[in-house]
Length: 174
Image (cartoon, rainbow, N blue to C red; front, side, top):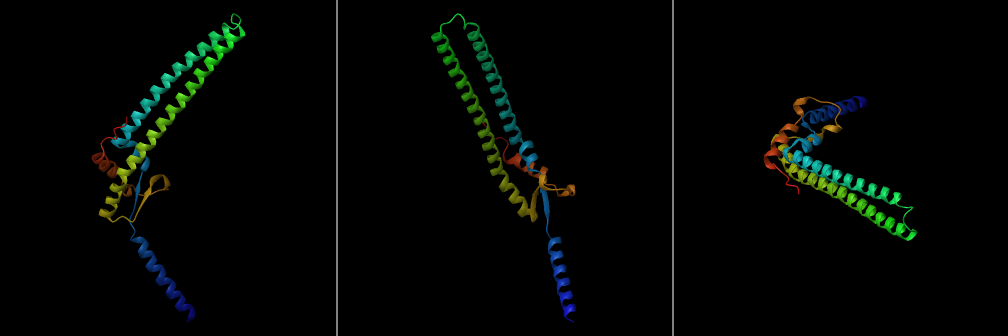
């Protein structure tokens, strides 16, 4: 009798918990796709890529000119006095240090802009997702990168991208 009551209680508990789990509505959202494929995200990505490439080209040219100056200095080494050589090499070192500092500063600025753009996109995205959750009585939204598999009809990525494009057509980065 004691075992029968335990069996009944456990069976009843499993039935209710299975029913509660079955009522959950879980959907999938590919955050990487949303951030990279929305109009604002794509525009920001293109802007930052162009800025990076422009800076890379500029710094490449500067690096070539510094190497040329170094080679010129080394070729004139025999003709210069020790003081003149030391003076010119110190000058060249200062230019190299300035070049490295400017390059690092440029890369840091691009990284900061990228981070700010992502944060701004996330600020606009969060209310859109929350509204969708409330309207469709969603229990849980999972990022696609953390999911092993599932049915494609539970993927809301394209719906969210469309809503984000309507609400935020551009980030206007400078």
